[in-house]
Image (cartoon, rainbow, N blue to C red; front, side, top):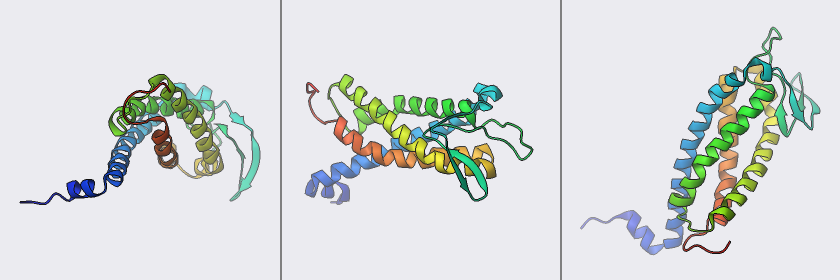
Length: 196
């Protein structure tokens, strides 16, 4: 009779097996959503066009000089991206910020039901969960934007938008993925619905 290592592990360590399964499924869904985000991020800035790409949108706009590049650190927004000739390129400004937030929001609209219903098999109060998920999304977005504000202007000065879009997607995706897992463990209780 063949021995099934996973069943043996799950029988001997049910809590650990549940965590391993949840982390694995969570990772697969998160990876798929990250690919979706990159696809959206590839074309959304072009939909907003050069007009919004040339509109600086930055807060708190704190000046920084690093590696010979002067730029502003921001929690919200991005500076205007320019090529070597000083011309505005798609990949910065208000258009880039709107693209970043839209692709992030769309990704969460896909991720929420997958993680809630499949990964964590939660039957908690969906309105409560959506509220806390939205609050978490806003806070995590601000945190990731603050991180991007430190390095993205340097990448914009040295790389093509396709390269730094990939970096933005995977760096912020990786950071937010770790945070979201623990948020999900809190807001997606397993079992029967409760009043929360």
